[in-house]
Image (cartoon, rainbow, N blue to C red):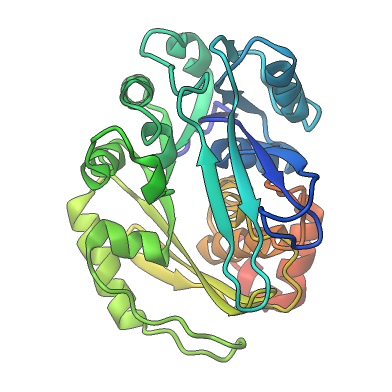
Length: 355
């Protein structure tokens, strides 16, 4: 249960510098890269700050102009970066090649031996930072980079648990990041045992459960979901991770590189809800959509605590809007998200338990 007296949300992870080419050039083409800052937990922090939440972001960055500019990019968007730790030699980076036509998107990571990679337990004063927090958000990536970063993540999770803070989690399974010999399914399973709410896309749920997902092949909003199969899936997961009260699953079908359909399911305390399918015919940038889902749900739970369907539809609308925003950050406001909700859904039904 999200604590009612405390308002602050704390997110923790690696802030990255993203490089890509303009005009859908391949990484091997052209001479110029454009750069943006991003990273899953930073993306969640920016989304929440844009929605008016009091949010603090924790990471470790190099003590040089690149590191300070990176933190400043979040501070300019309303995120509290006063507890960012400085040290190490470099910022983690990744290179992104967008999808085009039949060509899939490509990501190349360069994160080894970054400032975050060398993060160790004891470096961050978690009790001070979390003492007035209601929610602590992390993802599977926080433990994927290195053994010492994983140890630091569990230190934070244990202190959050001790302090009675609601823990939010994104599976964020990235196979190419797990290079230090740990079993990612075992580590993420241990993390989930300390969490209260979780997001993942259907492919990540399939990986976690080692259970085939029902197909989502929607080309428009009329596709029918196999809800009985999904209910059995969520019930099994709850039996494995009984602490988790909220399971949010996002589903995307790429009709074409710039035409996607998007929907989501929310399992809360035994109730399974489905959001309507949104057709997105002009995708601009799909990076960070999962982070927009999670931030949308966290904000909606606070805004509409008694209306779970509205919480789900709000999270989906936030994620859909992220597809229209270049870069990692979802800069959609609460008013813009509500415009999508009210335009696409039966608002009388949505609001009947809230007004």
